[in-house]
Image (cartoon, rainbow, N blue to C red; front, side):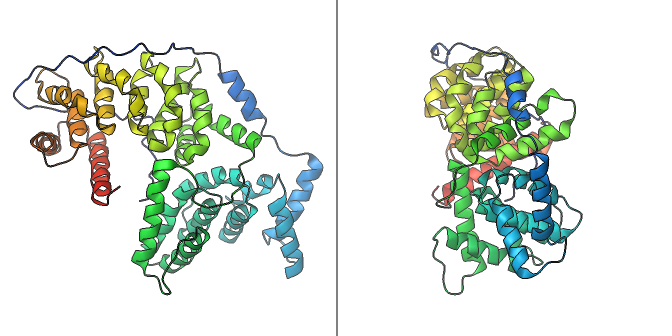
Length: 429
């Protein structure tokens, strides 16, 4: 399934409503002391990093424009000259200067060639602007060109667009050919005449692995240019400082599809003293899921932050930070209902067996907020769908949907997550 642009700045909060009996909630164990919260003025540093991404010198700009006119076939030239220009542009370290604008060119053919040149360049940092183009490209076959370029640069999230393309009558053939090339580049053996089902099965397995690890399955890729990567990610991380929502949404889109590539910078940004700056990395890490596990230690101190604590709890659960469970469990009894809700969700995502009695108590507590009760029901359903407790939790969620007494978008997203977990369990993952 193709990732959808997230609902902007919508926290992933949940709750449960109305079983008519109440049971005592077991007192959670006292958690260990949190690491100290050491925030600092990081925004100037991020701005300085972002400012390093500057256009090349004027002479280099002219050289690049001349090469781009030939490589993008904006001017007529013989085949040999065009091939030389393509090679020179692909190998130029500042090729981004002309290729990125070409990704949004009015002419479809130019956008396609720009995407192809990015993929052939092996400049893996170019996956970031290509990922953003995937959000906005509307022409179906050009989407495939962009997705193919992204996967060639080592980002397997783009395989979702090839998989989707195979499912469309107007793009099936083109998507299938690109997918076969992607699979063979990963040394995956296919039959002499592979079926659509076989191809899509391989793509979906690669996508499942990507969601777990966020690392390339394509061998022998060069590392992204470190300076460019830092600068580009820093530019995304400072977008919440402004008042425009689209740059923030774009930033979240790119970073949550970047796998482990963005994790070090996301973890670094969590130390900023600007709460609106550190909130977005927490949201992105939660969206990344297990691929964001490397940021667990950086997230942990924020459990004690009154501004972003609930986001931090949610992120720890989503990335699978089981080592942090002793810090999360006590929050189920916190006086702040938002933290109780986030803790319930996290404990479900972490499949914490020790918390099941407390979660059941929250589900059945008539005096508890609906958010917390929905969170507890979701958490209990994360363990499966067959035990009496799990059936009770499922019935509670179904009742919320039928009565329409809970936030529909959040409830829908919870149900989608549970359905995905059920599918993964059925497939043995």
